[in-house]
Length: 246
Image 1 (cartoon, rainbow, N blue to C red):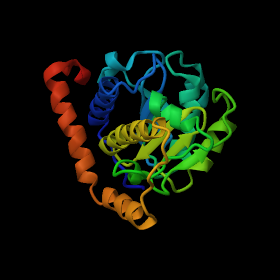
Image 2: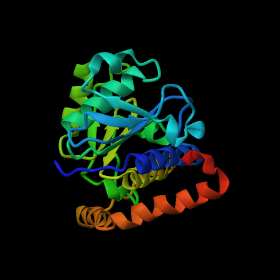
Image 3: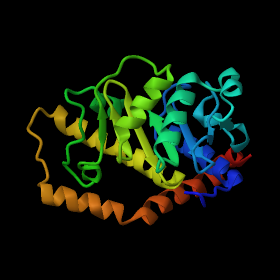
């Protein structure tokens, strides 16, 4: 972790790209939700999208550099959402592997999070990616507005990189922006498949433990696929809205 090095300029470009892609995938919600990437090994310094700016308008230069080592200045920033500072600041600091954090409220994923119990059943190749690999938060109590709540969520993540937040949404963490974006994209796609299957009223045909576990491991063996998906999407953005790089 001491050798953790991030090119801030590239991180800004990639994070802005991920925000733009999220709008194109119709996973955004008004001017809410946040994506961040740690710039320091301890997670105290990170980039995050600005408060109440639509994902489709965010440029690389718009991203906020947050320094949790200066809490007073951080709390006083008018362009930084309180819940973003609390959740992302705590998870980056307390979960060393959470270099990138993406938190969203997509419609179908939030519908899945609102079931009793919230879960991602393994019924196909996409949903099996998350087999036994999702933490679940069952204690939604309103918007996160305390350091304690941020720490609680970080503790629930444990060694998992995804959290289905009951009655709330989803949080995905990953080593890189490309892996995180592909993961949150696939999570929402899997949610759509599960909800569509449930809507028929017929029983779900669950994969066996062996098939689901093997599929999850197969996904874990191809991070280059996830990164290439992200890079291909960036090529589309470069043609259609290159200002995200500004």
